[in-house]
Length: 438
Image (tube, rainbow, N blue to C red; front, side, top):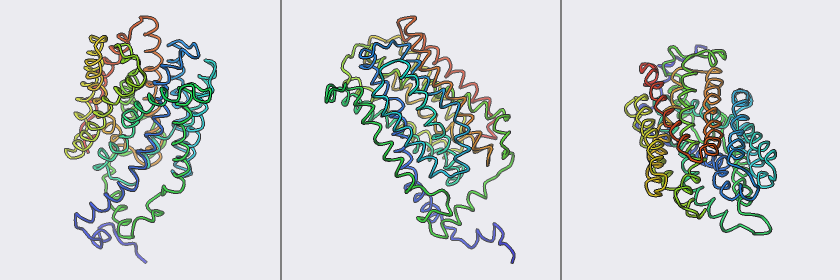
């Protein structure tokens, strides 16, 4: 029996635009809010240490350098296990592996409430990085099996909205927990913070196993026509010049460039996320609850700009300038904030500009890998680029802590990372538009 051709199968399906819109609307509502919630939980467990720091350092007699190293060691574990984790996900399926990731990071984050010494803090942060390794690249890889290139900027923006939302909601929530629960049952507020905010990750880890389909073939919420349309849309994309081999993930200059570009993203992201409470505190605000509420402002703007920029990038089929302009805004916000360190209002406004810029660029950056990678190369390439990028996570936590202790100011670190964002603009413009503007 002969196999029907791609064109003949396509003609057998309904071709109206409404059927296509209905399919991707269904996929979006089924997958993206859930992944957004998972990313919200992951990022909350990763950065709540920024609010905990305001109380934890005094309680445990830790220095800023100890905090910076501990926060940064997360990224060492993350970097080392990023590629192996994503390759395992491709072998065993997203359902099992993402569930495993979420359960282990939830447990380890909760155990941080029992830390007493710098060594214990270092070990748990390192293990938390190992546990979470593979989540972001794994989800990004998974989404390539459900959404074509031309739709991916907006989809990734919706998924990554969990990041600024975790700070938007998590900042005030964390400040409230630290303040209200302090002293309850003999535990300090920072201990309650780690314990309570670990619970959503554990619950979601269990739900992943029952909720997430491994592929379109096992997706019971799709009918046969929808399943066939999705397969044809993905199969019909141009694969010209796209790499499939594992070694291409490590030798393709575009993967290295992508990793360096995202390194700039994470330099800006974590410099703001981990140190925003401290910067606002140094501007004159002393209440942990007030600091938590003020951190919501930059993150509210980040949510909006992430969605706007991702949708605009898809609509115009343009990627490079949708990264360069936000990068430039982040550089301006970081550098300019050093001139207003004693003014709370100006500090919050400039951090809002910086945070909105780096958040807006993030989904567009992660729409790039699928434009030149496929198959095993995509699994390893996305993870390898994430590994390179997360060097920025380590640098932005440890180096700012070290510079602050050495100079007694945040200025040197913020200016340094602002300059790095400008360097990122040059890297993006060096990417050929014929490859990335899809």
